[in-house]
Image 1 (cartoon, rainbow, N blue to C red):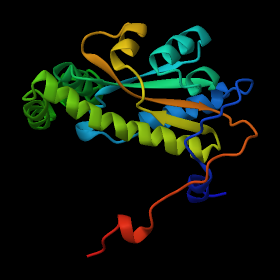
Image 2: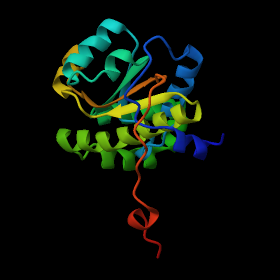
Image 3: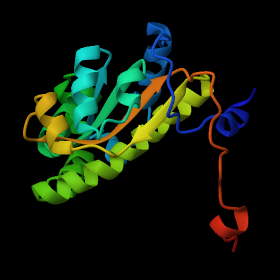
Image 4: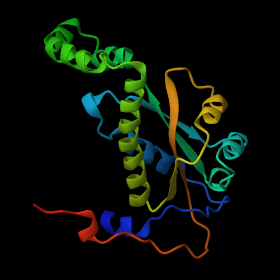
Length: 204
């Protein structure tokens, strides 16, 4: 099946088989897709916690309104936004230059432009911007799961403060959304309902 066919196949899976686990190889492919997702300026203002530990998943379930996906999935990925934007700029240009002072100097105008854009944001605006970027990465994780025929369920239904506490997040990183992954049980799923093209698209 093609990628587009697999998008028809996927759904927001509510019934995971806890006995079936995503392999380390496939998990690495999903994480690679997330890492390769586009982000504004290439700043990647997010961090993803990959939870396979069952005890931690049960704690997340308690703060996730007891949704069974947290317990039964193979892994739950917690997507977090970060607003330490000045530090992201520094690290970006360290990576881009490979630590070479001359290469970094050649990128000086781009670095100044990037700093001007990102460092002008106050902490709240910076985090809101990071949240939007984080959802792009989440989308690439969903797409990778579909390509690999791995079931997934994105969720916002949880207590973010509770998740932050469970994961012991620093003040500059906040939980945004989650993605539970694994394999479906052999049970009937709700039919996929989508609005028609004419409702969603306007061609000009």
